[in-house]
Length: 135
Image (cartoon, rainbow, N blue to C red; front, side, top):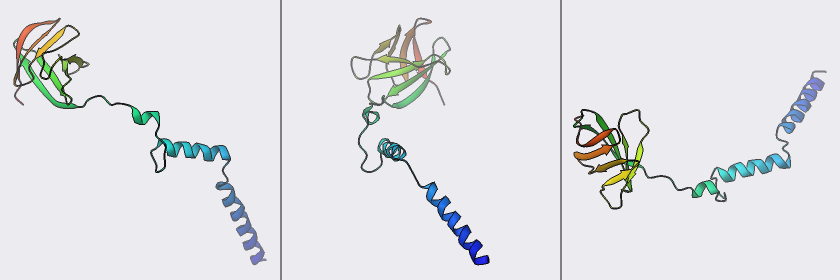
């Protein structure tokens, strides 16, 4: 009797285990698509692989301006422009330049220089000198 119960339990285990790996053709195709988009070996390039990323920030500098307010400048690594913020919480405003090193302009703002001293103007702030803030 014990042998019969053991054989019966083994048979049930085999049936249950075989049902776990029984996949439909659609499920297998979906798995293949996921593997392709995840960049696994043999994967075909997808449109997501051809997306051009924006330039990275090469340097961030905080300035204190003549009006006593702060200015935050992020210089982009491709030297195409800078991101400026009048307060730390502001959304950065992108300024671009016709040549390397500025002057940078955009959205009624102007910035010249990216060193320890810059000239900056915006609609809310007159043309003024800003000096790199001590850290």
